[in-house]
Image (cartoon, rainbow, N blue to C red; front, top):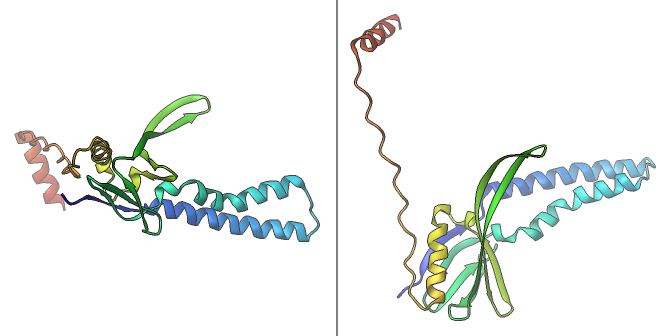
Length: 194
């Protein structure tokens, strides 16, 4: 049986955040250099400025699970997960170790919880020294995350993958309620005013 493919790509929002961080780092770096050139030596300024300048690099190093390009292939014999450049990292299905962590963002106003938003799942695949983490937000269709996790669990047990399921159709719209004579007359009068 051929492997099942799940197309993946780095989300555009991720690159927008990276761009904003690099832009902020460039501005703060220039201001920091200007302050140091003027003789303003302060550990607070240097420390905070250095942290802001290093933020984009730290962000890129710690969020590799959101960068991917190509197809994630799940087969009965092996699983291939692309990295940020598109080079596949191959794991044998028999030796695959899997950890799935759901990601939630919690919003607070001062100390009061306001809301919680699900941000997909982070899937960690391991086999010996090889390790790759990937987020379901990197899938072209993030709604296929549950199917991906189910397929990974199936191949670990020696069963063939089923593939992405068709997205659920939205529920049908309610039929419009019957109009009464007053609404019809109001619409005719409004149309006549135009």
